Structures are given as C-alpha cells and as structure tokens.
Length: 203
Image (cartoon, rainbow, N blue to C red):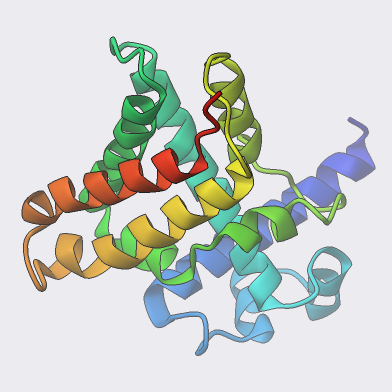
C-alpha cells in the first residue's frame, strides 16, 4: 500500500472512530457530519470523499463491530463439540448476545441499528475501509462446513434470525424487561430452531 493510500485509510479510520464516539455519546440523530469531522480533526469536505452521509458511517461501524463479534463466536465454536448445524447456530447467537451483554454501550448501538441490509450496504462501497471480518463470508463457510445440511434461501434464514435475536434481546439484556435474558433464552433458542427447520430441504 502506497503512502497516499495509507493516508486515505488513516483519514477514513479517524472519521469512523470519531463517529463511533459521538454516536455512543449523543446518538446518531443528534450527531452531525460537522461534529464528526471536527472531532476527527479533518475538513468537512474530506468526509464526503469516503461517505455519503452519517448513516453510511453507521452501517460501516455496525458491519465492523458485528464482524468482530461473529469472528470471536466462530473461534469459540471451533473449541466446542457441536456436530449439529442448528446447535452451531444457537451457540453463535448465544455467544454473541452474551458478549454484547458485557458491553452495554455496544449492545445499545448495535441492537438499535442492526439489520440484514446493513451488511450488504456496507460492502457496496469499495473505497471504504472494509471490515476486518466479513460476516457473510463466515456464514457461508459455516454452511459449507456442514455438507449434509441443505438450506432453502439461507440468506432469508439468517435475516430472520438476526432480526429476531436483535429485537427481543435488547431490553431483556439491558433492562431485564419484560424478563431477564436467561429466562428468555430457551424461548429464543426454540424460535431459532423453528426458523432453521423451516429452511431445511429434506429429500
């Protein structure tokens, strides 16, 4: 990577770091592009060389942090003896939610904004710093590591699991509302198993 390219990457990283700090502190809606660039110490015009708006920054940040979480979950899964595909998915979901529970500020940020489309949108812009970990590639690798499992519309299956887990876990983990997450977990797991079963192709 040349010096010019390294400088571009460094500025983009500063903008992402600045935005993340501000999003956590005051929320996305109250954060302006001017706030982000001022905090990053770069000119406002520089922002638009990398991002269309603050929502694209949000999408990249979520893809980045979700990717790190998912990689950690996959590494933990490799140490477990879970030969069944649906048990592997359940493990990944529970591990990720437990890790988010240890970092409430990240849970607050991700759970309010996480959606399937974000992963696709964040990868559409080649000029942006790409996530160190691509969640979709890891998911595809997991499917391919289970050759006996045949899924109908695996992308839709993942979309439904992400939407379900992110929507029901937020208040239970952060506020024990309406019940603590540990009481909710068995029902969440059953619902995820049901989603998986509905997408299994049987001969």
